[in-house]
Amino acid sequence: MDILLSHSSGEPIYLQIVMQIRDSILQGKLTPGTALPSIRQLAKDLQISVITTKRAYNELEQEGLIDSVVGKGSFVSGGNQEFIREQRLKALESKLREVLEESKSLPMSMDELIEWIQLLDQEGGSA
Amino acid sequence: MSMNAVEVEELVKHYGSFALSGLSFTVPKGYITGLIGPNGAGKSTVIKAIMGMVLPEEGRITVLGNAVTGKEGSYKQQIGYISDESIYYEYLSMEQMKRIVAPFYDRWDEALFTKYMELFELPKRKKIKDCSKGMKMKFAIAMALAHHPKLLIMDEPTAGLDPVFRRELLDLLAEYILDENNTILFSTHLTTDLDRVADYVTFLNRGELVFSDSKDEVLERYVIVKGSRELLDPDVRRELVGVRETAVGFEALAKDQERAQALFGANALFERPTLEEIMYYTAKGGNVNASSHPFGS
Amino acid sequence: MPHLIHLVRKDFLLLQRYLWLLFIYMVVFSGFVQSDGSPLYGMLPGMVLILALNADMRLPNQQFLVNLPIRRSYLVLSKYVSAFILMLLAFALCMLLNTGANAVHGQSTAVNLGQMLGIFLAQLVFMAIYIPIYYWLGLKGAQYLNVAMIIVVMIGSQLSSSLLSDADAVPLSSSITNHPVAAGILGASTGILALVVSYLVSRMIFARRDL
Picture 1 (spheres, chains in turn purple, red, cyan):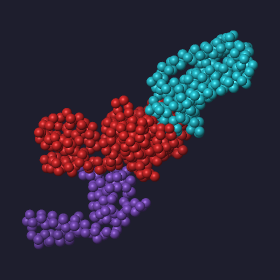
Picture 2 (picture 1 turned 60 degrees about the vertical axis):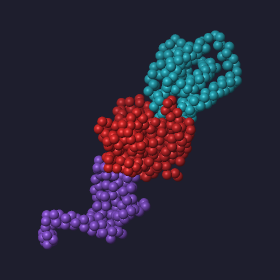
Picture 3 (picture 1 turned 135 degrees about the horizontal axis):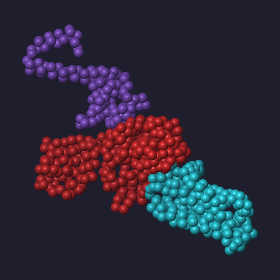
Picture 4 (picture 1 turned 30 degrees about the horizontal axis):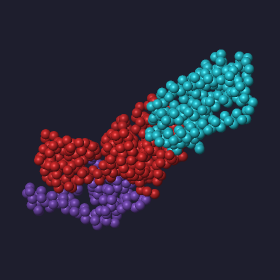
């Protein structure tokens, strides 16, 4: 897992961490049960404060994406597969809406669009 | 045991025209706290009072559960203190100096000391007076960490350090704070890289506490407002900590981000402040406000 | 208690760099070089006292000491212990050296213990006065204090040498030799009293000092 922080973007640091870990989990890059770095280790690696890191983990815990076990650390939650699937479906939906909008403005018919998607699928191209 | 490594209550100390009058704040255990403020704010005095060097006229200081009286010294077994200048005997070598200090500490760790000396590439036999400021600071850090302190206190540690070592210092501190029983308190008048790793910030100005809070909260509470000078009427000014006016507009610090947004709405630009900006406007604030005329009204 | 030993050890380590200087002084002013070695009795212990105290007179060094995990009063007490041991050592060395010189020059090697005790006592009183002034004046005044004290040491060494040779001192010294126990007790209690009072004063001064 990579976390890349920008100190000049104006976006709060804790939010950058939340978004990047959330994305990794929702995209399936981090599988359930995977151990996350400890709060203090992550703070050290990112050269940021412990409180900022703690806040990010708390936020992720509230979203049900990670579990924290006292004395053991934090893990990607396994109990919330429904939620994760839902979130991923939502992300897919918004991408589909974008595609639809774009095809309307081209314009391109629904049939043409479906045909194109099937063609791409046959090429084996989920590049 | 308290959640605080250091508790300062109603501290009173007069020094000529300078005074700490009833200063209270805490240093939470397990975190890094930065004591910030311009020169002469009283940062050094506070740190010296914690170390028992300066004796307060009134008030109480508790360090790791021990009351600081100025007489007792054993609580310093658990403190690693790094002064802003070299306090060692300049004419001794670093090795000789260590031999003087080591026996005083119950938990002196010779192997750890050697590890840091090697890590910092410090030649043991070099006389302290022949060391650069950076080397002296590194030596002080090695000495402070070698007795496994529970509390690390640093007075202006980055003054005179090159940027390369400043970053290395960040790593060292982060490694030290990996153990949640450890606490760091440092003072600085510059906003340096150190602020990045600080969990809490205690801001002193002219001997008075401006705030003592989590850094993230402080940075989210305050806001920088930029806009046209026409927006500044006396009511608006009262909401601002400090204003800097020029021919092309004003820049100000507001204490409460939500109030500022409600007050200025879409007429102004809002930015997240840095600690340096908060320090600047607070220190200058009173003066700028007092001497400026309400052009807008 | 162990900390007290470490503090005294520190003073000895700090004095190491003056060893050569002290050695040269000792030889130059001893009976080996001088026709009269008696000024050495006043000079060497006085010098050692000034050097021992000034080794950590600088403010940063005072700060260093106060930052050690020990009571403030130990810092003061250790100065008395160090100074006493060093003066005693210096005095013994003087005696050894001058006696040796007398032996080489074929003079009597007999030591008048009464006189010696008297001189050493005078030096302890000197120390009992010097240390509180040193703590009282602190960094600012100590430079002047040292100049003044070096003059006192010079005069004192002349006095001690005249005490050794002056005929007027003979009745005094003979009365000491005639009542050695009484003189010893009187001398020792005077010395101890002076040092205790001096220590209490120094401690009181140093306990209130901001560094």
